[in-house]
Length: 170
Image 1 (cartoon, rainbow, N blue to C red):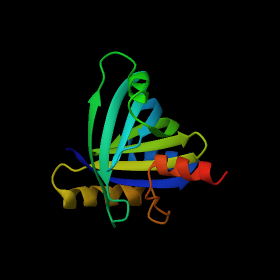
Image 2: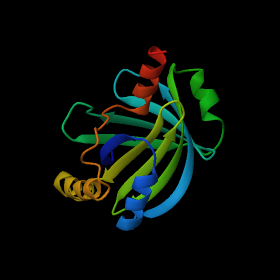
Image 3: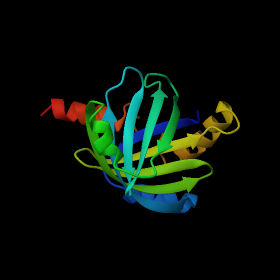
């Protein structure tokens, strides 16, 4: 399974971060329109991601309480058919998250600027572990500092958890 080091923070807007991304020379890759359908399973998280019309299912395990937020993940892509209709007949849906994601890349780190329906603006970092966890931590720390994220409160929850909590509070 691939391994990422991850971070999520809430933002009021992307204005300041966009300036810092330009200064960092992070490359804008593309805009992704995503719908994540989370299913109830006994361990970890399982979601169907519908991204710009393509379907894939992603399972991941992540320690939300640890100091570092490493995530083991695996995924399968569907080549045809409607995976959402197929899966809703056999799995219980827990939450649906819809977002527009602006994807930037810098040194094996995916930088996501997410506008999440019902939740607002977020920035996520996903640094791929290639040469060990210590190397990933160094690269991750550099990007956190360059984007001035060290002073922001990290959210150690998935969008699934945030959507579920927001619906309970209504």
